Length: 196
Image (cartoon, rainbow, N blue to C red; front, side):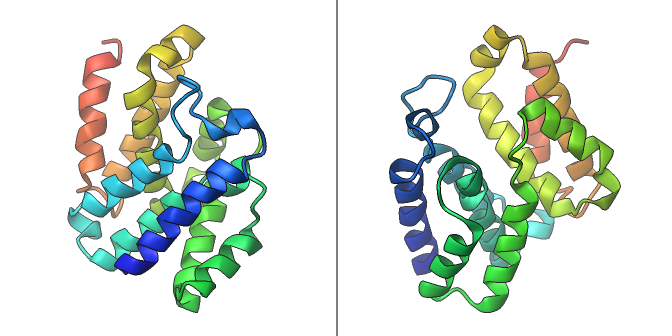
Protein backbone atom coordinates (compact mmCIF):
# COMPACT_ATOMS: atom_id res chain seq x y z
CA UNK A 1 0.00 0.00 0.00
CA UNK A 2 2.70 2.51 0.97
CA UNK A 3 4.70 2.00 -2.23
CA UNK A 4 1.59 2.38 -4.37
CA UNK A 5 0.63 5.55 -2.53
CA UNK A 6 4.14 7.01 -2.83
CA UNK A 7 4.25 6.31 -6.56
CA UNK A 8 0.80 7.78 -7.09
CA UNK A 9 1.64 10.93 -5.12
CA UNK A 10 4.74 11.50 -7.25
CA UNK A 11 2.74 10.98 -10.45
CA UNK A 12 -0.04 13.35 -9.34
CA UNK A 13 2.58 16.05 -8.74
CA UNK A 14 3.97 15.48 -12.25
CA UNK A 15 0.55 15.48 -13.87
CA UNK A 16 -0.57 18.70 -12.18
CA UNK A 17 2.77 20.42 -12.79
CA UNK A 18 3.66 19.29 -16.30
CA UNK A 19 0.31 18.41 -17.90
CA UNK A 20 -1.97 21.21 -16.69
CA UNK A 21 -4.43 22.45 -19.33
CA UNK A 22 -3.11 25.99 -18.77
CA UNK A 23 -0.53 27.78 -16.65
CA UNK A 24 -3.38 29.03 -14.46
CA UNK A 25 -4.33 25.42 -13.67
CA UNK A 26 -0.87 24.80 -12.18
CA UNK A 27 -1.59 27.00 -9.16
CA UNK A 28 -4.35 27.45 -6.60
CA UNK A 29 -6.79 30.25 -7.42
CA UNK A 30 -6.73 31.84 -3.97
CA UNK A 31 -3.13 33.05 -4.29
CA UNK A 32 -1.82 32.07 -7.74
CA UNK A 33 1.44 30.72 -6.29
CA UNK A 34 0.57 27.58 -4.33
CA UNK A 35 1.16 24.57 -6.59
CA UNK A 36 -2.17 22.96 -7.41
CA UNK A 37 -1.00 19.52 -6.37
CA UNK A 38 -0.93 20.67 -2.73
CA UNK A 39 -4.75 20.45 -2.78
CA UNK A 40 -5.15 16.74 -3.63
CA UNK A 41 -2.15 15.84 -1.46
CA UNK A 42 -3.68 17.68 1.49
CA UNK A 43 -7.05 15.99 1.13
CA UNK A 44 -5.54 12.53 0.74
CA UNK A 45 -3.32 13.11 3.78
CA UNK A 46 -6.32 14.06 5.89
CA UNK A 47 -8.21 10.98 4.74
CA UNK A 48 -5.37 8.61 5.61
CA UNK A 49 -5.55 10.12 9.11
CA UNK A 50 -9.37 9.97 9.32
CA UNK A 51 -9.38 6.80 11.41
CA UNK A 52 -13.05 7.05 12.40
CA UNK A 53 -16.14 4.94 11.91
CA UNK A 54 -16.49 3.44 8.44
CA UNK A 55 -12.95 4.53 7.61
CA UNK A 56 -11.14 2.60 10.32
CA UNK A 57 -10.27 -0.04 7.74
CA UNK A 58 -6.96 1.09 6.23
CA UNK A 59 -7.90 -0.31 2.80
CA UNK A 60 -11.01 1.90 2.67
CA UNK A 61 -8.95 4.94 3.64
CA UNK A 62 -6.37 4.01 1.01
CA UNK A 63 -8.95 3.80 -1.80
CA UNK A 64 -10.61 7.08 -0.73
CA UNK A 65 -7.18 8.78 -0.57
CA UNK A 66 -6.30 7.54 -4.08
CA UNK A 67 -9.60 8.85 -5.43
CA UNK A 68 -8.94 12.20 -3.76
CA UNK A 69 -5.41 12.37 -5.14
CA UNK A 70 -6.84 11.96 -8.63
CA UNK A 71 -10.11 13.88 -8.31
CA UNK A 72 -9.08 16.93 -10.40
CA UNK A 73 -6.71 15.28 -12.87
CA UNK A 74 -9.15 14.91 -15.76
CA UNK A 75 -10.70 18.34 -15.15
CA UNK A 76 -7.44 20.27 -14.91
CA UNK A 77 -4.86 18.37 -16.95
CA UNK A 78 -4.49 16.68 -20.32
CA UNK A 79 -4.56 13.26 -18.63
CA UNK A 80 -7.51 10.98 -19.40
CA UNK A 81 -9.28 8.31 -17.36
CA UNK A 82 -7.58 5.76 -19.61
CA UNK A 83 -4.16 7.26 -18.79
CA UNK A 84 -4.94 7.03 -15.07
CA UNK A 85 -6.11 3.44 -15.37
CA UNK A 86 -3.02 2.44 -17.34
CA UNK A 87 -0.72 4.11 -14.82
CA UNK A 88 -2.41 2.49 -11.79
CA UNK A 89 -2.10 -0.96 -13.36
CA UNK A 90 1.57 -0.28 -14.17
CA UNK A 91 2.35 0.31 -10.48
CA UNK A 92 0.65 -2.90 -9.35
CA UNK A 93 -2.80 -1.74 -8.34
CA UNK A 94 -5.19 -4.67 -8.66
CA UNK A 95 -7.91 -4.63 -11.29
CA UNK A 96 -10.48 -4.32 -8.47
CA UNK A 97 -8.66 -1.36 -6.91
CA UNK A 98 -8.38 0.36 -10.29
CA UNK A 99 -12.06 -0.17 -10.99
CA UNK A 100 -13.08 1.30 -7.63
CA UNK A 101 -10.69 4.25 -7.95
CA UNK A 102 -11.69 5.10 -11.52
CA UNK A 103 -15.37 4.87 -10.59
CA UNK A 104 -14.75 7.23 -7.66
CA UNK A 105 -12.79 9.72 -9.76
CA UNK A 106 -15.50 9.72 -12.45
CA UNK A 107 -18.16 10.48 -9.83
CA UNK A 108 -16.12 13.50 -8.64
CA UNK A 109 -15.22 14.85 -12.08
CA UNK A 110 -17.33 17.88 -12.84
CA UNK A 111 -16.27 19.78 -15.95
CA UNK A 112 -19.28 22.10 -16.37
CA UNK A 113 -19.40 25.35 -14.44
CA UNK A 114 -18.09 25.99 -10.96
CA UNK A 115 -18.97 25.26 -7.37
CA UNK A 116 -22.52 26.62 -7.63
CA UNK A 117 -23.37 24.35 -10.56
CA UNK A 118 -21.73 21.41 -8.80
CA UNK A 119 -23.73 22.17 -5.63
CA UNK A 120 -26.97 22.34 -7.63
CA UNK A 121 -26.20 19.04 -9.37
CA UNK A 122 -25.45 17.23 -6.10
CA UNK A 123 -28.62 18.58 -4.45
CA UNK A 124 -30.79 17.59 -7.40
CA UNK A 125 -29.30 14.10 -7.63
CA UNK A 126 -28.55 13.38 -3.98
CA UNK A 127 -30.76 10.30 -3.76
CA UNK A 128 -28.79 8.64 -6.57
CA UNK A 129 -25.31 9.44 -5.23
CA UNK A 130 -23.16 7.13 -3.13
CA UNK A 131 -22.08 8.22 0.37
CA UNK A 132 -18.42 8.10 -0.67
CA UNK A 133 -19.00 10.95 -3.15
CA UNK A 134 -20.34 13.19 -0.39
CA UNK A 135 -17.43 12.18 1.84
CA UNK A 136 -14.85 12.99 -0.86
CA UNK A 137 -16.58 16.27 -1.73
CA UNK A 138 -16.74 17.28 1.94
CA UNK A 139 -12.99 16.72 2.23
CA UNK A 140 -12.44 18.73 -0.96
CA UNK A 141 -14.60 21.68 0.08
CA UNK A 142 -13.24 21.75 3.65
CA UNK A 143 -9.70 21.99 2.32
CA UNK A 144 -10.76 24.75 -0.07
CA UNK A 145 -12.52 26.83 2.55
CA UNK A 146 -9.78 26.53 5.15
CA UNK A 147 -7.27 28.01 2.73
CA UNK A 148 -9.53 30.42 0.93
CA UNK A 149 -12.00 32.17 3.27
CA UNK A 150 -10.74 35.64 2.31
CA UNK A 151 -10.70 34.68 -1.37
CA UNK A 152 -14.35 33.58 -1.24
CA UNK A 153 -15.28 36.75 0.67
CA UNK A 154 -13.65 38.93 -2.01
CA UNK A 155 -15.43 37.01 -4.77
CA UNK A 156 -18.76 37.32 -2.94
CA UNK A 157 -19.22 33.54 -2.91
CA UNK A 158 -18.59 32.73 0.76
CA UNK A 159 -22.27 32.33 1.69
CA UNK A 160 -22.91 29.93 -1.19
CA UNK A 161 -19.76 28.00 -0.33
CA UNK A 162 -20.75 27.71 3.34
CA UNK A 163 -24.20 26.47 2.31
CA UNK A 164 -22.52 23.90 0.05
CA UNK A 165 -20.32 22.85 2.97
CA UNK A 166 -23.37 22.56 5.25
CA UNK A 167 -25.18 20.40 2.70
CA UNK A 168 -22.18 18.07 2.35
CA UNK A 169 -21.69 17.93 6.14
CA UNK A 170 -25.32 16.91 6.61
CA UNK A 171 -25.13 14.23 3.92
CA UNK A 172 -21.96 12.74 5.44
CA UNK A 173 -23.32 12.99 9.00
CA UNK A 174 -26.32 10.84 8.07
CA UNK A 175 -24.44 8.27 5.98
CA UNK A 176 -21.88 5.52 6.46
CA UNK A 177 -19.09 8.05 7.12
CA UNK A 178 -21.02 9.78 9.93
CA UNK A 179 -18.14 9.32 12.41
CA UNK A 180 -15.61 11.04 10.16
CA UNK A 181 -13.51 13.80 11.65
CA UNK A 182 -14.60 15.86 8.64
CA UNK A 183 -18.08 16.22 10.15
CA UNK A 184 -16.67 17.77 13.32
CA UNK A 185 -14.30 19.98 11.33
CA UNK A 186 -17.20 21.22 9.21
CA UNK A 187 -19.22 21.90 12.37
CA UNK A 188 -16.45 24.16 13.67
CA UNK A 189 -16.14 26.10 10.44
CA UNK A 190 -19.89 26.50 10.03
CA UNK A 191 -20.27 27.66 13.64
CA UNK A 192 -17.55 30.27 13.09
CA UNK A 193 -18.67 31.66 9.74
CA UNK A 194 -22.34 31.01 9.09
CA UNK A 195 -24.78 33.77 9.89
CA UNK A 196 -26.99 32.91 12.85
